[in-house]
Length: 118
Image (cartoon, rainbow, N blue to C red):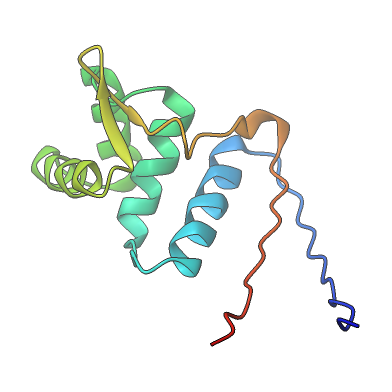
């Protein structure tokens, strides 16, 4: 008979969709081998909330909010596209739909890390 798994519940509350998105992408980075930087996480979250990074006003807002520069954004976009975190869809740079959630409704994650036998 297999022993019961222990389930741990961590509950956080946030008012801001952008903060929720940042926490989500920070968790994805932490449990993967991608080791995204804080700025990359911020860009992913910002893009998820805004819908895309193709509009100049979105890029300008990101630069102003996070004290970044257009060349820095371009370098981050290039890296995240190589990792398939960002995609180009109909000429617009967007978060890969496989990673995208509705952050206005909050996020519930279940993470299972199973031990391989062998």
